[in-house]
Image (cartoon, rainbow, N blue to C red; front, side, top):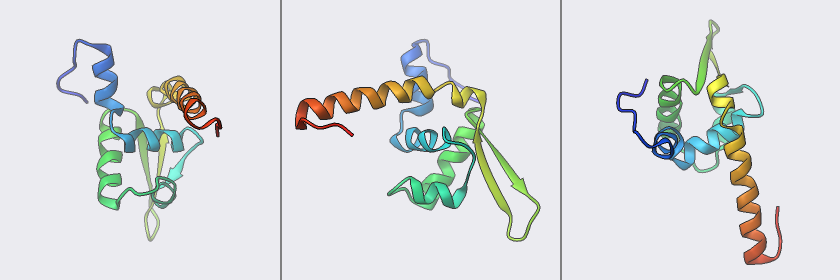
Amino acid sequence: MLKDIPECPVEMTLKLIGDKWKVLIIRDLLGGTKRFNELMRSVTGITQKVLTGHLRAMEADGLLTRKVYPEVPPRVEYTLTDTGYSLKPILEAMTEWGNSYKTSKTGTAH
């Protein structure tokens, strides 16, 4: 859990998801549980070391859970917690804003 909780709520949010990789991990987990390799493929450009570090930090912050199945090789799945899912409106707002910005700059949105 976070040791230093900022007074400012915006700073608190940024402390949890202020890294682009964390936002992209959350984006992908909003669609449901994913295995490590699925996240590696969907979060384009992230390294294994960075993904591992962010998943551990996000688990410690209570944004996702990690479930290890007793198989060989071990199967590990990541799922957003209720706290992680509560970020959905923020990501939806970011999507809407990003589309509006792209439209204003290029005349097209995705």
